[in-house]
Length: 401
Image (cartoon, rainbow, N blue to C red; front, side, top):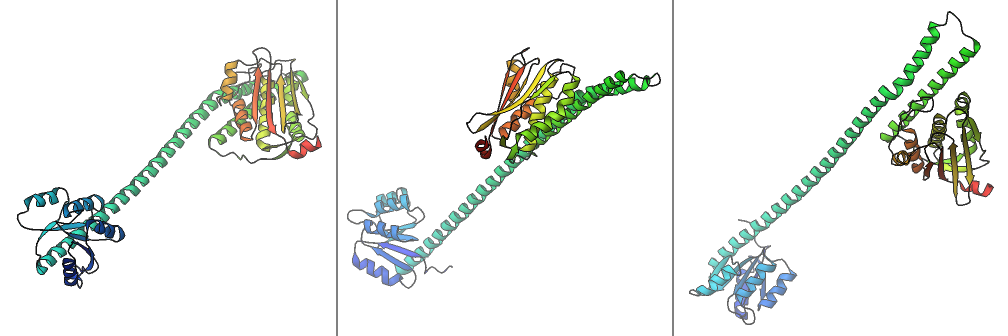
């Protein structure tokens, strides 16, 4: 048997003599609290923990059955007993149905008999509390398990999403490699085969220059295809550095126009570059260089011989710099522009049959957004294209200008 002297027993009776008798009889065995009315008993229950409540049946204002009913509603863990006289069947039934009474004690009570009932009631209380504790621990364990399952489910869903993304990336890479890269490589191979087959008869200087220019153009096209492909793959794998620094536009203009100038010469396209003076923008240098290079190559690719391509930058006094690439080429339909701005690649051959991945302009749009800028495309089929890049201006540039 457990030691019960740390459990509180509340005895409720409107007769002070009965309260004193109970107190003196059971004080050595339990913690005793007493109350002379139902209301006083409820106050005791709200002030301290009670294991067992014993109440008289007949009391003024609030009788024992009403008290038991209130206790069952507000303190269901307390074990209750009621003092009653034999033959009071109606009271017994109400106490059971409404008060959920644990046991009845006959009046006058016998100390030994009552002690046995109190000990059993305390054991019942202890088991109830233990069950409640175990139930709570089980609920907590279930909640933690559900959290772990949900976390694991989210983790698996994320891994599945990444796997699907990698599979799509792999399929797209294979498609581009097998289709868009194979064509210029085959053409390059054909040029070299012609050169080998006719090497013995000799070539004029003009023929050699023409072959060299064609080979150079195809190599540049392949290089641009690979560059776009690598940048797109890095973007899909989230391996792109988006950090922003102060970037002088003149240096970037010079570097990228130098890369495309030979292509412009070979296609007899006039390349006009307006020096951006000392304008500096807050951007990622590598990404902005990629954007300029793609826009220039794209403009040259879709501009026929004898056309024009221009690159310029202006500051309009609103804290932003505007970079413009314009051409007199074949232009684009509204559908193509919408596809590009939605991040979807649009592939079509250039005016000399140049191949592309269809990723260049879509990547440019994504990179510009990552640099806190915007990209606008103005074009009509057969009327050329104008691409406007808006980027934050470096404050020092604003002062210098």
